[in-house]
Image (cartoon, rainbow, N blue to C red; front, side, top):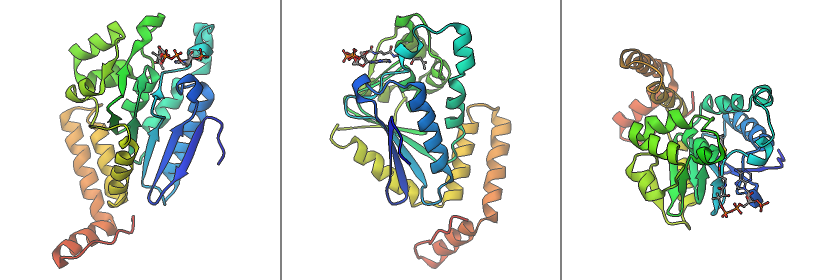
Length: 257
Ligand code: CAA
């Protein structure tokens, strides 16, 4: 499928969605977000794809929502555009998503990386929620996901000052998984995607769902949810194969069923 603002490529077992508005540091305009969501939903249905990487370029993952597109909007315009409805659809993607971040991940860019399941950053990555500097505040989940990731104190500091934090700080504060030299950040994400793609897909899907459940439920309900997913996997061929292969001391062959 040809898109205007993203480039989608499929590799063995995984796919890459690259944000592609380099002239504006991958500012997330409505067209780009529509394309990204459409691509992610198509990849979610594609049985050859078991993991997705979202990336930008070395200079910018994304410098936020497109300010020029929003500058003259009224509250009613924003309500009618309902741009964040698309972000809810990203949250519903069942396959694991890895953000491979280099350079700026600001505002909606930071929020997009946090909507992914794992964040691999280059040593030049800079994260932040600078909306306060342009008279607004995070709108695509920043106040919620950042707070859950780094805690109230750090989230307040980032959201209220709008300052950027380095990849090192982001790692220390628990926002990201790993920092790698800029030449390797995409390769690192690809290696991780390949590893996840080699696992039984149903177990991956239900495990992702259960981890995400921890964000919006009580421990009691979350444990119940986890248990049900665990039991459900005993209805899969891959559970039989995985456990039999262990006993037979051989490599399992996954069917994805
Ligand atoms: N929207 C629209 N255009 C943007 C943009 C954005 N978020 N970020 C950068 N650009 C454009 C610039 O306007 C510039 O375009 P021109 O060449 O046509 O002038 C181009 O990208 C390059 O940017 P700079 O010249 O500013 O590059 P720099 O290296 O000097 O600075 C930067 C980089 C610090 C990231 C700076 O561009 C910046 O502060 N960008 C805005 C960051 C921001 O405020 N993001 C939050 C947006 S609101 C939001 O995201 C709401 C939400 O919760 C969803």
